Length: 624
Image 1: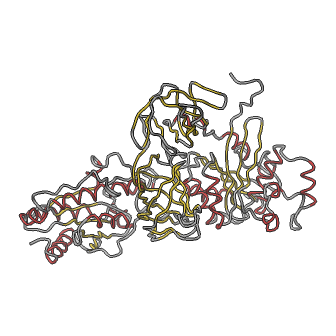
Image 2: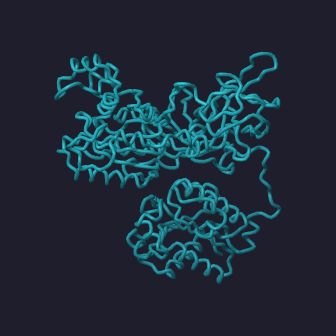
Image 3: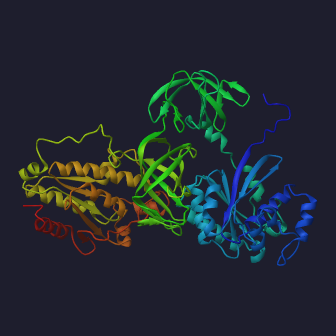
């Protein structure tokens, strides 16, 4: 039962973002004014202190631009937090800067937001920084986006201009997976369609901006449905024999007598008591700060995770994470940093930069370091095990900050994609490689061949499987021992749990590489026919094998040719939007830079391609 007079309205946290001078602060000021948050003396002071270039009335941007430098330059530098409410909902809004050098401020604010209002100047259209902010919103877990096309007065309130900008946003966001995206035309200076319709935008039949914000679902219900997560922030030793674990519940619900898993150690215990600000309670929900006492005397320190034993968090020594780099000094492969995952700080090495993301088209590009504001997928190797979740499943337990160990400054923000198998990280000292009595050389010598992994890469429809199948038949006729790993076949078993996102593709190739290495150890010639679109992933497989064993064969055909062939009808479905993350359409393919062989299937027949490969294998003494 709620207390008398308790405010039962739910709370929505959102940010305003976008490119420079798109009117974010003015829009925020207009929302504050329209919802009755501005006093008359404040409005009078704003009119008296308005900048000379203001056409009329008060400069509403000054309601949120509080720093002297912001007022002098007419820009937003720091994040301005404001509160306002309507009869149906309470709001906390963060007005974020648009300049590229302040991207870190925007990313920080987005990490706790339920929704985002992305502004676009109607006269300038979609800018590079707008795309950056849209992508960062998705990366930071913001699921609901409202695109506010502002300054409609500058384009004569043209519906055509609004429709064109809306179409461009939808096209860009189609590569992402926002839960909801709305577009609304507004004029912050005049107030059109912010809280009230305005006669000049009568052609727009959707809700006002404020109406949209009132209709977006709150995030609290989602957090309560997640598996239980509680990271220990402090150990309370108040009184003899008392040992309370203090922290904030990061997901789900917990009740007295519930069994919990203590991670990463793996011990189990039960909840003896739960205390909140007003004393002991029977249960607690996500977002509540509590003190938990366990029934068992177990070594539980700061940074330890208490989790649902039936749906535990990940516990590993290596992880892949999307990184937003926020430091002037670059992130370097092989350098050690401190990662702060919740309340746990652990030293880690930036082991591998998988790829950097081009913010204009979301394509993946090769990178050997990260500069300020770069966004990339990076592999981290930890000095010990840590407990965490994928960021998409839990923002609180799936995020971390990167700390420069030289100056103790925050250098980057990380969103965990997945844990990485110990096969690619530091292997436990308890796991020892078993040396066989029969060596690789003996096995391959028996077969009159040298072990090799022939890695066929290229677009779907380029002819990888056709050439690889024909080559396997030729090797069999010649008496050689080989095995063909085919992409579709692997998806039926080894990788049946993976999808086709970029991160799942990376994990798929990692697994195939490990299998290929074992087959090479058996003395086989392994034929591997996979798109494998990313150079770093192919380089990773090469690193698993002995020098000379990895043969990269680029099966080359243009995208146009592959689409014409389209043997499985996949391109047509991708163009129709039925398949997401399809290589060549909405996911990039990185051509090999120095492959051992290039097979041009637009010029060569399958038989000619096989003969070319056999000649190469004989020259390399792989076939004897």
